[in-house]
Amino acid sequence: MTSPTPDTPDVNSRIEGMRDMDPATRRRAIIDCANLAPSDDALLAGAGALPLEMANGMIENVIGTFELPMGVATNFTVNGRDYLIPMAVEEPSVVAAASYMARIARAGGGFTASSTLPIMRAQIQVVGLSDPYGARARLLSQRDTLIEMANSRDTVLVGLGGGCKDIEIEVFATSPIGPMVVLHLMVDVRDAMGANTVNSMAEMLAPKVEQISGGKVRLRILSNLADRRLVTASVRIPAEALTTKTLAGAEVAQGMVEACALALIDPYRAATHNKGIMNGIDPVVVATGNDWRAIEAGAHAYAARSGRYTSLTTWEIATDGALIGTLEMPMALGIVGGATRTHPAAQASLRLMQITSAQQLGEVTAAVGLAQNMAALRALSTEGIQRGHMALHARNIAITAGAAGAEIDRVAKALVAAGDVSVAHAKKVLEGA
Image (cartoon, rainbow, N blue to C red):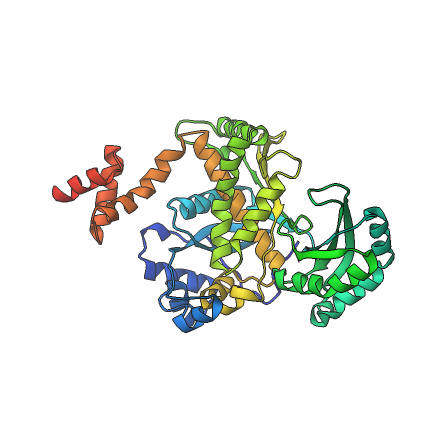
């Protein structure tokens, strides 16, 4: 489990009235709370944060940049420390739902999270073998040599305490192209996401693996199923903290447990259930310049590791009636290399969170995913998912209908009050002004 460095200033993630502030006032509030430099104001605002020249060096055939709304989730306490969470996302209700659940979670001390070492694996596929089990034995006999060769590729990483720690070898006696052996390099990548590191090691070892095994190496690439780089987040909510105007907290907790039960046994429900978790995780991954596609791939593969796709979370009721939620999933995030280092706004996001390690980032991100799942289950087991979502979506509808400035809130409130969140009704409201 990670912890803040001794000189990290305290942050209070409980900011009153954020919803009623304009964007500039919100930025000033979080900059003050996080003790950021004034220069981070413009970066978090997004205006010119990624110069076109810089974007042109990041990917191919650049013609411009594409903007997403950047919000900040408040109220989060993870491992006893408060965080302000940057979230880059286009979907309404995500930031609000995460913030509200984090506020409820504070009643029980917030979220706790832990993580394993940042082990990534590279796969080296060997084909053209008549004796795959013999090839496996020959490769295992050269384990130390292979590990030493891999580590010679990145002495800096080794100096930081990382590097290749072990090898694993899978035998597939039958496949569409005959027997094959797949060697896995298990690499501690420290604060990197790790793709470039493990891919380079695999490329380097390919000739040696061919020599030892007697086969032909084809693929040599990382796996996004980072099942040795796991994060576990949990939350304990006193039943009374879940009480609504119409339902007792114990009844809400029971409803949430029952709602999760369907996701545990039914892949049709699990797909939507896990998508809700990723509604919280992906925006943080995007805001920090990490690879959200890799995180998605790893999450869904992990959810199907038993051979049946299931929920990434579990929800239970403790003997004292408290609601206990747990999320476990791979979390291959980095704070060095790639867009995390080159995108100025991603760097500002990490400063806002006061992140000092990739493991810490993974733990906080998992807590946001658990909060988002909590929000969805609470809504589903009480008033239904649409009421809160459509109330926030009404602002988008108002803008689509032509509302601007102060009209946006006025029209949105009228749509919600009428129970008709549609562009046609929004235009009628505007015309009646």
